[in-house]
Image 1: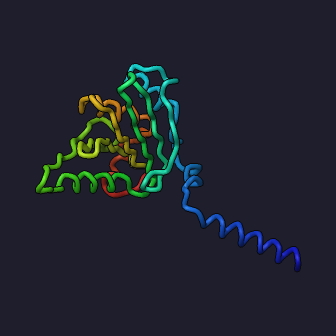
Image 2: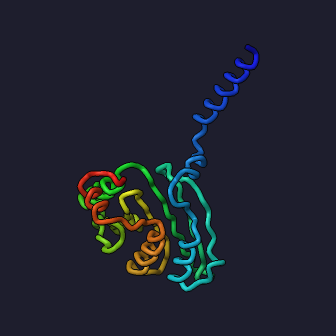
Image 3: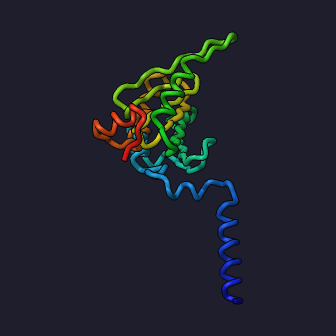
Length: 189
């Protein structure tokens, strides 16, 4: 009886503590591809023409509760480049991206015009650059990847190329059937 009571108390304590918190660090462990992977560092180094060891990375949890990695490097004393890659494995990433694109295209502001997202071909099932936010979003039907770029003095084309390079390592190649299922509202098995 005493051992049973102790076992129940320990079990209740563990379950209570597992449900508490909010730091989200436990969420990092179960997600698909890890954030802050070496392929992203290599892509960033190649695109910016810097040594990979000059790029620092730090893992965190984004505002959406999903894991993200911040990549930072300096091209010179006054030119810092920062990319935040967020990997969201919530359900229906394609539908979420399509809705985001549609809503951003319909946004109106009387004080300053907003720029519509632009399609980025050959990157996952669907990808768009959101100029007002300086980020690229793409999906492979399994997860939604966002790469936010902060690079002062660069062109839109350079930012998109960097974001594309940072997103590509997270995307899986899908069969035509899987893409069709995703686009038509199904889920990938």
